[in-house]
Amino acid sequence: METPADLAIVEALACMHALRGTAIEEQPPTLRAWFSEDERESAEALRSAIAAALPRAVAGIAFVADAAWGDAWREYFRPQRIGEIAIVPSWERAAFREPARAIVEIDPGQAFGTGLHPTTRGCLLHLQEMDLAGRTLTDVGTGSGILALAAAMLGAQHVYACDVDPVAVRAARENADRNGLTARVRVERTSADLTGVPAAHVVVANLTADIILGLAPALCRLKEPGGVLLLAGIVAERELEVVQALGALGLRSSTRRGDGEWVSLRFRAAAP
Image (cartoon, rainbow, N blue to C red):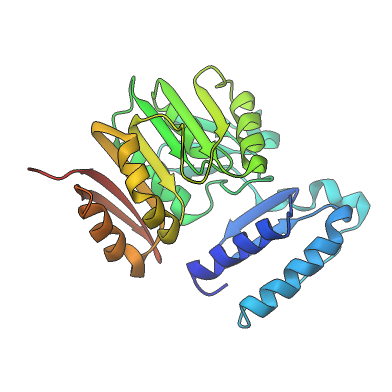
């Protein structure tokens, strides 16, 4: 894919075709996904849909022999450091000995969010700069749960992670259990308008510019007075649009991070 928008389109098409995937690797401009044999027809349909929606994209399917299936995708995933956080796949955890402020064990799987994408990296760096000790945090669009888990490891006392996708909810719950955080990280499926999602001192939404703009009033309501709204998944060319929309709701951008074509922003209440 040539642009962040292309990647967002492919992700949306995958959801439309109900593709689960055994593993997903996001490393722009390349997106790799591994599927089981019973998803072959849907995978072929996805390839055709990508070709129709993105003529410049190159989409192909390769078949992996059964004997190599279980490990074929693992070669692409190694422990990675994002600031003082280490993201480690389960098959590397026992051997991982590097010092880190937090070690998140997470496998590439049925929901996006393994730390490889610039939007995830940006959020993880923002979280490390914030004082989360004893705070509440709500993660909207949690995906794999990576940001919620990292926040809990960085000191957040109560974390609420939510997603509209049941596959993401299941994956995030499994990852919370894998990391021993089920007592502090609650994962729930939410409605598209965020009804019933609790307010928190820190609200994180790593989505897309269009979704953020549509949810802006709801996201602002979720942020407690004096709190922080962390937004990501924003293509740089849409940054001003997002800043202006949040400004109209009484928030100002206090901290910005850029990574290639992606931007992540921290918002606080504007001075009276």
